[in-house]
Length: 64
Image (cartoon, rainbow, N blue to C red; front, side, top):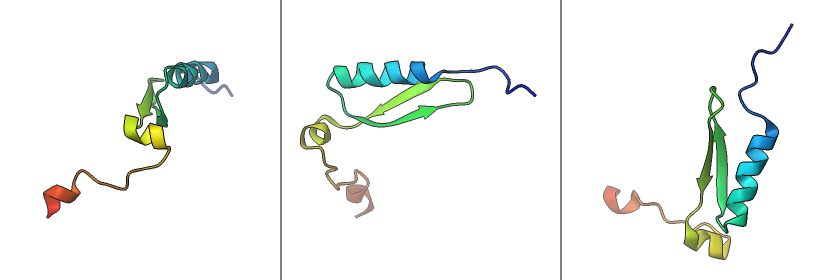
C-alpha cells in the first residue's frame, strides 16, 4: 500500500530553517499543514538576543 503523494520533504524544512537561522532570526517553531505549506514561526528580536522568554503576555494588560 502506498502512502500517497508527498507534500513536503525533510530537505524543504531544513532549507527553510537554515535560511532563517542564517538571517539571524530565532525560530520558535515550524508548522506544516496537510497541503505541505511550511510556516516558520519566529521569536521576538528581544527574545532572540537573550535566548529567554520575557514571561510577559500581551493579554495581561487587557484582562486587568
